[in-house]
Length: 304
Image 1 (cartoon, helix red, strand yellow):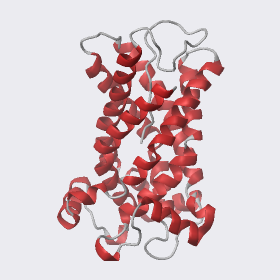
Image 2 (cartoon, one colour):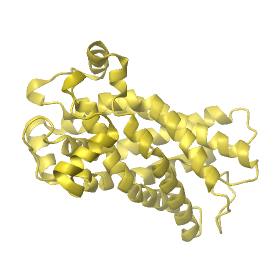
Image 3 (cartoon, one colour):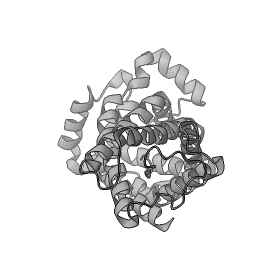
């Protein structure tokens, strides 16, 4: 379990460092005002941030996902592994259910973390900035809005993460078995990169509209008066103002981010576990009763 935890942290750090600039672009595209468009698309957003705020602008809010990384990966590995053992058989359905359970539980950490990240990504640069960092952001939100404010967007996060993690773990398991990802394989790392990247893309595609809603709810009131009364009201207003395409806003930068982030994360974790435990050890440290030995069941880290 300790090795799962350490390997997950290593993979998570790799994923966050690779993907955070894309996440910053995604959030800014998702929440910009349709009446005053600041960015024309993914590339223009990248260029504008670098020109106005330097490369460091792309890494705004980095501390929040890194800060929550340890807790998220510990929860994900523990819940997914124990749920799979409790279900008794390593089947595709059980992989989905175990992943969904892990996704639901980690929302306790993920929601406040993403709230702070979103606020930091959207605040102005320079002396006018409101928050000094992730902890300062959460402290200020708690002082002004209480515990409810810190957990803003929890329901939408839960609706996004639960099915998304199910798809994520299921896809990775199916692909690693189909590709024959065996320890000692010369092409092990490329296969893991492909399986991890594909898993990330499919997991995002499965629930992306809810991610747009979550970002809007968490950013609501940051620049002006609050606009939304809840998830359904946010969806209704967004659709009436911008049409169905609003629910795909930022999707390009998200998918560009999803493949390298999850490829780096999965490959790092699996390689660490493989060489640390040896060829015969499973990532959760224990065989699943009733499992069919059709291929290796490799470790799946958190998707940040």
